[in-house]
Length: 92
Image (cartoon, rainbow, N blue to C red; front, side, top):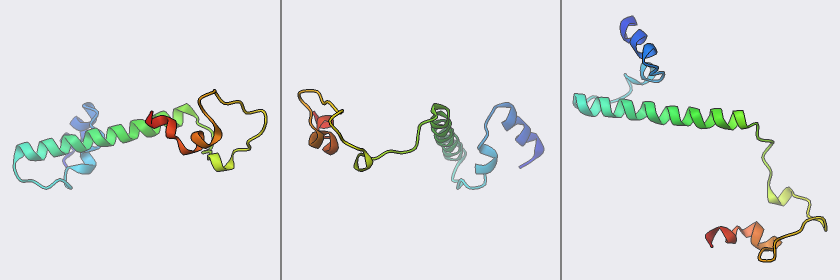
């Protein structure tokens, strides 16, 4: 890719085009451009998701199997431990 095109991609903030342009098969100009831009969108969305997760500063992953159940846990009347673990309430 020429320096001119690379600079224009940078100006337009098309961060992934410079890495992708040779990997997209060329059948016709419209198909090529559509696929190239779609890949740019997909990679932006992936990067955004990763960035937001990092920004949220989530604690380490937790699993219900590791949770210490005790008398201090109080469920709503329509929910018990088994239905919570099975996630059956989500279907309703």
